[in-house]
Image: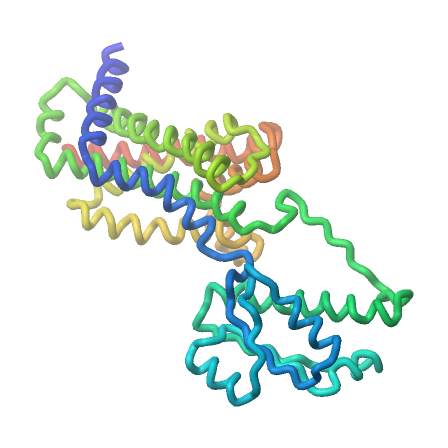
Length: 371
């Protein structure tokens, strides 16, 4: 009972210290609000008020139909120009896209030939160029198909693909980006807060006060793990509701309670990792460097940015030892696909095992450090 009381009291001390640290509080608030919103909406899903110039050498109903299809708010009104002005406009940055419709475009279409339309993209406008080129191709293909259907209404392609998009029917980038950002922030903040809590004790000289008290390294570590883990867990739950569901309007189909259970197990592993880093680093800058060197591979190779199946098999097997891999699998299964306990229990079990190993290693290192 004394051990439990000591862990609770030390944990409350950590919470009071954290709440009096304005830099850490700003980091927590920003990480679970504006950072999630910017990550979800940073890559545009479609062009917005993009500038486009058109060289119409055909001046036919078919070419005019394509020009009229570039509508606001995706594009500003197309500027009709010539070849010389088109090149000069792109060189000066006035146009992000330029379209060159060749002569006899409509005649070649009706004759069954495949005329080429030249699309030039100013790739220095990365955000617009990334989504705009594909958007323009879809517009041209759709308008050409509609135009030809008026001359040959019974004509249809021999094979027609019917695409059904599951879980994200409109392919909104923000849906994936928001959930992935929450997962990444949970990992990052849990490591930073626990590592910083231990470094703070050393820098302020309060670690010596703890050593003369009737507390053990296990109690010291457990207090930091539960207190910092609780802060991240509460912040993640609030972010899921107010930022993801309310602000970004991202539907969550699965059980939030089950996801928070998985988050708790994940925090058990990552906070232990933060304690380990706190025993290795001797200052806050050193802790920051350690976290950067570790966090980037954990996030990139865990399957949150690219599917694990696209990685080399050796990397896939190595990353099974990382808690982030199982947490990403669990989070995407629950929040995207509505998976239940019967599906995600292997990931929950893996997080328990990995967390226990990390906790034991960090505790051993803490005992040697305090000794």
